[in-house]
Each structure stands twice: as C-alpha cells, then as structure tokens.
Length: 97
Image (cartoon, rainbow, N blue to C red; front, side):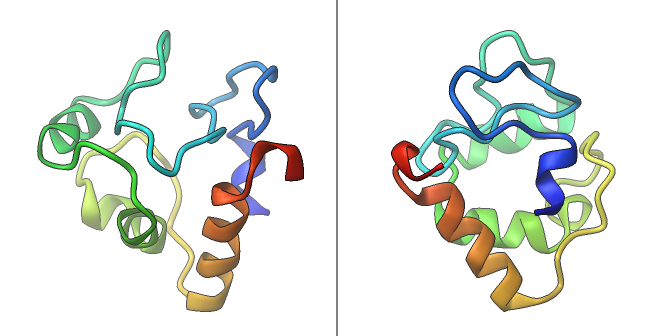
C-alpha cells in the first residue's frame, strides 16, 4: 500500500517520515508521542478529536484539501474501493498485520 513508504503499521516499528498508523482508527488526531505534527494538523485536532473511519476516508482522499497546510506530501487516493480497503486494513486487529 502507498502509505507504507512513509508510515509504519506495527507496534514496534520505528517512526518513519510520517507517524505510525498502528491503531490509528479511534486514536486522537495528532497525538503520537514524540512525533512533530504540523501546526495545521494540531489545529485540525482541536475540532476533530479522533480518527474515525469516515474522517480517515476524507483525509486519505485529499489530505491537503481537508487539512490545508499539512506536511503530508501525498495527493490522496481517489478510488473509493482502494480507500475502503486501506481503512479496513488499518482498523483490523493488530494481530492481523
């Protein structure tokens, strides 16, 4: 998947260019300890306290459109089926990864 070039998904992997996506569904936005989030994402977190599946879908569609000024240099995933598969994977129990 496209995300894995910059993000780890397992609990004991080091942080890469982007924050770990391990247990992102339900996690507080911009909350991974030790990761330096953009001011734009920290501000977004004040209005969107947790990453829900619908919120992740909107973000992954076009990150900069949802959080203008995010540091994430990614154009997004336009295909709804591809986004749904990614979010289902991220929401799966950790033992499935």
